[in-house]
Length: 199
Image 1: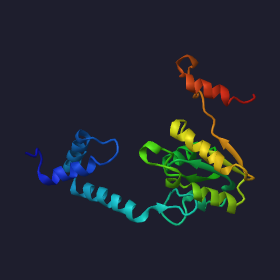
Image 2 (image 1 turned 90 degrees about the horizontal axis):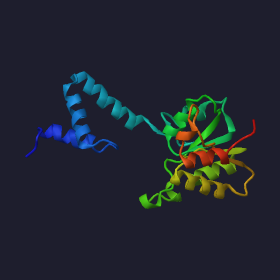
Image 3 (image 1 turned 60 degrees about the horizontal axis):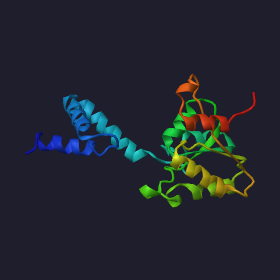
């Protein structure tokens, strides 16, 4: 026997489909929505529909965009000769918030994960190669996560771009600012030594 009225059960079921949202969290969210005003619920529903109807992938870098090009690709001040490859739009936003990068991006929308059925053809790798070949790209910076899948993807990109007249670099990995060496794991310390630079 259901604990909730059928409309609430349906809402809980739909909310529980979101990643990281279990049934209990979905029930809390459903109860929150239930206690909000009708106008608040309408705004939420309208914002969901607006995202579904208006957001698409940028035709150049595959970032999320409202028009044909995302804000980065539409900016004439960006350096088109430098392309930073990221695995998802969230990584792009994280890099953008630093204010340090003035090039453009290429969003893969995933990383190699054979156990999950994600292979090279599931990523935007063909488009990356076409972009490097068609434009005057001087450097490709690979900024995938420093985990097994991110490293495998970075190695594949390096292999695919080998032989082309483009510099290939990988974001540095190592000890975070303010970190304490005695609490840093072995892999992070190893990468910090491997990617050391002159002072």
